[in-house]
Amino acid sequence: MTLTLARDLAPLGIRAVAIAPGTFLTLAYSRTMSNEEAQAKWGSTVPNPKRMGDPDEFGILAAQIVANDFLNGTTIRLDGAQRF
Image (cartoon, rainbow, N blue to C red; front, side, top):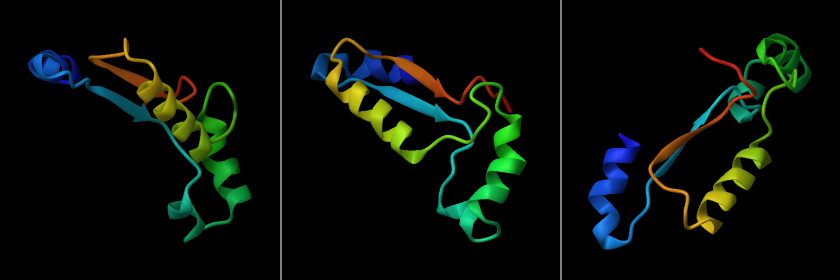
């Protein structure tokens, strides 16, 4: 759908890029377990690196998407090769 959206909005100069995140260590986990427990339970399922994603890593990717005008019509997986 990202490619279709990018093509439809191209005449308006609007780009469409999606981020497909894997397991990130966010506040949602801190309600039920400590960060260390969350990393032990979910971080071990990530192939490389063997940890959950840091929210700052998501922000860095978002900033790069905004900065790179040629990036358009795609979905970027940010998941350490983890697949659900």
